[in-house]
Amino acid sequence: MTTRAEFRARVTGRPLLFDGAMGTVLQSREAGTGHGFDGLNLTDPAVVGDAHRAYIEAGADVIETNTFGANQFRLAEHRAAGSVSEINAAGVAIARGAAGDSGVWVAGSVGPLGVVLTPIGRVTPAEAREAFVEQIQALVDAGVDLLVIETMPSIDEIEIAVGIARSLAPDLAILAMMTFADDDRTLLGLGAAEVARRLSGFGVDAIGVNCSSGPNQVLRLTAAMREATPGIAIAAIPNAGFPERDISGRVGYPATPEYFADYASAFVDAGISIVGGCCGTSEEHISAMRIAIDEVRPTSIAPPRPAIVSNGHDESVSADPPTALKQALEEGRFVATVEMRPPKGVAAQKMIASATMLREAGADFLDIADIPLARMRMSAWAAAHLVQLHTEVETILHFPTRGRNLLRVQADLLAAHALGVRNLFVTMGDPARIGDYPDASDDYDLASTGLIRLLKERMNAGLDQAGALLDQPTHFTVGCATSLTSSDTVREAALLAKKIRSGADFALTQPCFDAEAAREFIESYRSESDGETIPLLLGVQPLYNARNAEFLHNEVPGIRIPQHYRDRMRRADDPRTEGVAIALEIVEELRVDVQGIYVIPAFGRYDLAADLLDAIR
Image (cartoon, rainbow, N blue to C red; front, side, top):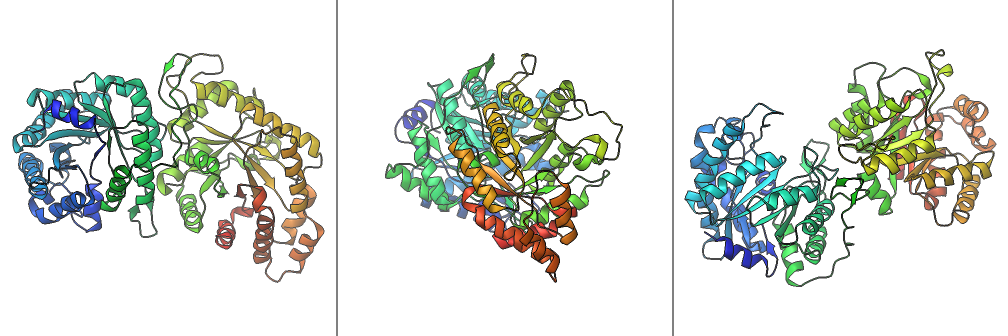
């Protein structure tokens, strides 16, 4: 057993390197499929021992037992609830055997129960205590060096677990870590600073963040924790980025060992005492981190921005915690997004299948239109949520102000945020007179610039329009509309500048067919912006046929299609292929002037959008 004093003395010296993911390694060796990983301690201890030895050889100072889910609730899913003590004891024995006399510490892993406690759920605190007592007692009796209580989504659950651990082993070192959603908050809405203050009061020896979204987020969160509680060791054990699902359905993680090595150095520079890897990491990641720590490598990672306290919110989230879209735009990556229309009804299967196809074709994001052309459809924020849920592709929600009063605007925005939809494209929307219900009201309380200001200056600061406190700030990334080929370029540039001053983060343009005119507008806009520019995502619409080209040119305000393109569409043997070719030419001409494309398929032909993405890729 490692005493609390020994542990604290160790983490005040050089950084302590934990191992990586156990489940990821076991899954890569096709172990435990269908029966859970914890049960392998009894059924296949050799494969578990091999995973431990791989991490030890990679340079880990601490290995965690294969007991993350070895509690009665999680084991019940595999009909092994009666084997809690046996599985935990075996997990310690396997790890201890792998460590041998290497000096590597064995940490007993205690994960969440996998149930929701009252009053939100149906499991009582007494039942939770009983489950934690059973698992932690087995780990302590088997002789772990320290306990790691990790990936906890609830502060109440982790308090119960820590209390049990401290009562069973008063002088055993305990590391307590929570996991955060991609909005930098726990499941119940706590920010990192509040979590740090509460965890540090539970009598633990180190606190931190594990799992969550990836190194970038975990660096931000742990830096905020260290700022809030400078007297306790902080641990950073992130996932290898956001999980991705391949065509076969297998889940993988994108972050490379080299990327983790760079972040290991960044964690150390930020004063983090304990580092390691969670889901998606392997012995290669830990080996790279070991080298980076030992060689004291410089890092290219910018230090995280300091925590903020504003408007009565004692929070540790940054003023603008990034969505994946925000990150991509800030990093200068060229992105591709495709507009989709929600279903006309409640059946979303076709939309989800099309979204999956677009993701595989190379779409980075998907725009979800809200009642386009004033035709009645499913609410866009519900459609956006379903797309994100089933395809794991981040969406950009189109949010028109037309037809919404101030109460409805804010209510719908909070609903979207609660469902994980954090990218918005603010627009006025189509007038009701052109759609299914021409007599419907078009009344609105906010123009698009007013809505942008409400989002960035009020809701993202934790206030509603009246200045009353929300329970927590929102974290919206906000886009606006512009036209690159307006008939009044001076007015259009001035309007775009006003939207930027209101806080817009990016702009989606109307479909563009005149690269020369677009380039002139972009150059003028940038020269007169006084440095206040935002990323432009070029609107691209593959023409469907000659009739479609003439309609857009003659009847849609703001769209001008040069004669030579209309002639090409009229002469084309295969108009749809020609339309994709024209779109590709426009993209290539303007690629250096914009930071992405916004594909608007004609007539819902997502296959043509996919053809364009394939060609670009």
